[in-house]
Length: 216
Image (tube, rainbow, N blue to C red; front, side, top):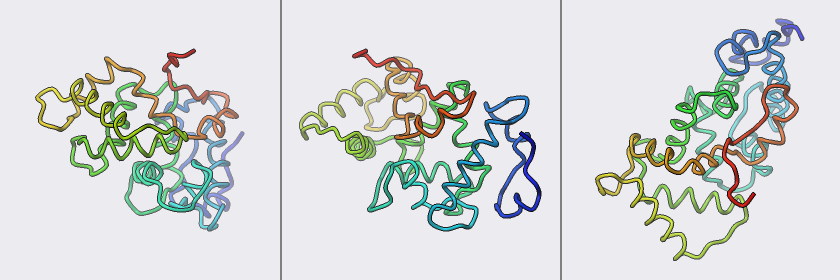
């Protein structure tokens, strides 16, 4: 699969050569076929609502969460992390680099860092109880699971007892790294809903959370 003609690339602001992107990410194949396959996916998403060669927040939510109606905390936070340039839209380079962290061959440290940023909703460099509660409720809603308020609070209590080393009510990056090392199932947050479906067609992007389900 060769590179796309320049006239086609010019329609996509921020387009980057698939070979260059493959060399910078875990999508490293001889032909950069995975990255070019991701470009086909990017084209589909970026043209789903507004055909401007960029992914806006509504298109992102529709693609990854199967709807674009109403506010979705998880979708909003993920969009912010994908939008590396903070322009309110995602270009092709942003898209590939963000998806790279979910690749099975991506560095574990990158996955831990991404998950920390996902929970750090306010971007303060700390994860606070209120942030964990918001995201936990959002994740439960996405998976259509229901827990009582009491159970949610018990989960939060246990999490902060385990993770908050100095018991100041905040989890810093080091606390998070230690917590993940003791509880690898926390990395299941790296499973974006429906990401498995849209990536299984790529030869080297076999989606895998790398965490066994305790029930299995």
